[in-house]
Length: 160
Image: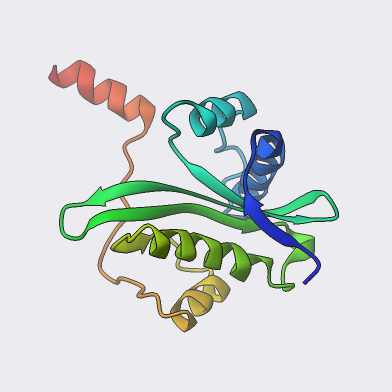
């Protein structure tokens, strides 16, 4: 293995943002990323961090990342939401994605989480096969629902 997996640090946040942006392009949403390095630093490294990261590093270069956070399931209890798992295009296929995935699942297991959940695009067949082969369940019949900041403002202004 030519890379290591470690906890993300403040110094890694520009690389994490670069990977987030690369993921947005892959997911056909190239202009969707609004978060900044300053946001990642504030939200990930404050007194009450909003997320955690693992990074894959090869020769002092970040080649992949997994960003996740704890949440609470009313059915199960303490859970993890895996927001993004990304390996840069040129480094796919060397095992970094699986190693990052394993690091998140190991964190969840060690912390006695009842579930790890995430979304996957229905056209991302490679990811779907990987997740199914790992024992994950792909839930059919559920739709992801988002309320954007703009729509939230509109709703609140019309209903409060």
